[in-house]
Length: 86
Image 1 (tube, rainbow, N blue to C red):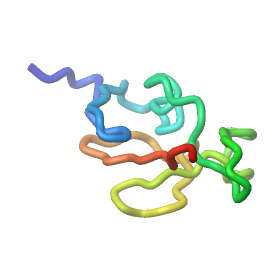
Image 2 (cartoon, rainbow, N blue to C red; image 1 turned 180 degrees about the vertical axis):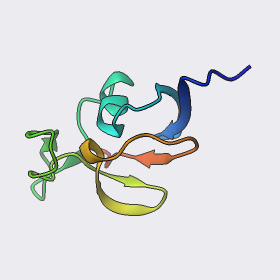
Image 3 (cartoon, rainbow, N blue to C red; image 1 turned 90 degrees about the vertical axis):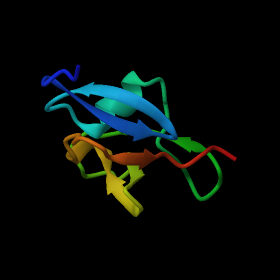
């Protein structure tokens, strides 16, 4: 039975259940991923501002690159990929 207060997404190949209304960034962190991308020098990066200004929280959503996860509310069936560390 599905919970109407939660949505199911796929995050880095694994299913994750997230409360309705949460940002994708909160889903990423609650799922145990501490970083969202790597810098051009290969350093792990994570969110800095949490309000869409810094672009450090970018992820790939449904095949669209460079989406700011702090600005996007989760929706049922999203497929999300963080950039793997080298």
